[in-house]
Length: 198
Image 1 (spheres, rainbow, N blue to C red):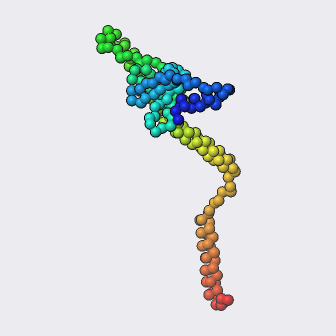
Image 2 (cartoon, rainbow, N blue to C red; image 1 turned 90 degrees about the vertical axis):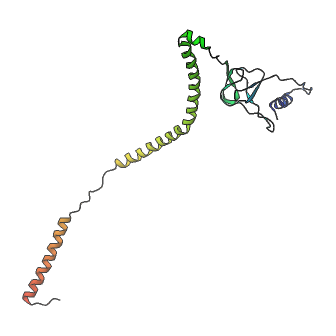
């Protein structure tokens, strides 16, 4: 179903009387982009109009044009926002002739290059912003996790310390050897006296 068919059906549904609705011819403005894509709008290509991409046969309805700057073969720069709405329409600045470059001694060259760079920088910045969105979300989750871990660490660090465990191996070894010597001395005494062990 095409957009024009949908509009006709909506007009029929919204009509207050049962009069036969006369078909009104909708004027469409069509254009071809530099990459060969065919686009069109209802009415003129002006800010506020919706820009559609002609999808071709087998497709029930044409999609909105994607957000961004689209250049037509006629030299128009059409800036499209969300939902295919045209934000602005500008004519592409013509490239200056070589003799103008010489006359301006570099000033015009700089101006043209600056315009082209600014245009491409905007496109590049938008692309970079789109690429960075998932990483920014990941950084926010990592920051939140670090805050949670820091809170847990501080909670444990604030706990009082337990009793210090000390090992005195030298004292234990001396105690064991003194007990062994006492047993040995006792055995020696028993042998000298001739008493029998129980």
